Image (tube, rainbow, N blue to C red; front, side, top):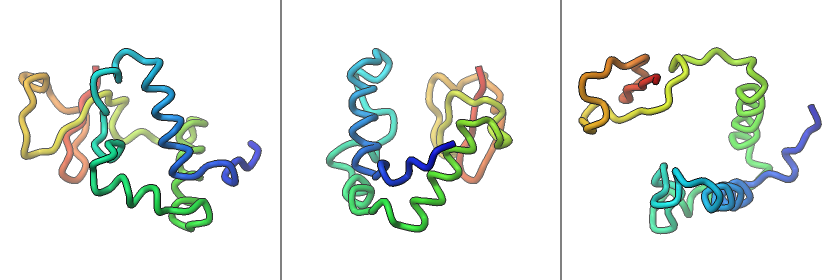
Length: 108
């Protein structure tokens, strides 16, 4: 796989996410993850990370492995998750497929 890390920055990931959001109905009404919101305090932190940041490069390497299918999925193909201390209506009467840290994951 070619090394594309020189073209990927947190800012470019956000822009790609925004373009995808514009094309996908499921994202049209809201951001799925709060860090993508301009007003979220973590948004500015993401933009401050440079492509040469060693932790960011590790994240890219892990993401490549995940996309290539070479990583084990500890969530068992989860499509939804929530914090342990919350009770969203969609999770009622559903058994989590995984519990990782403070999050419960659910598979369809």
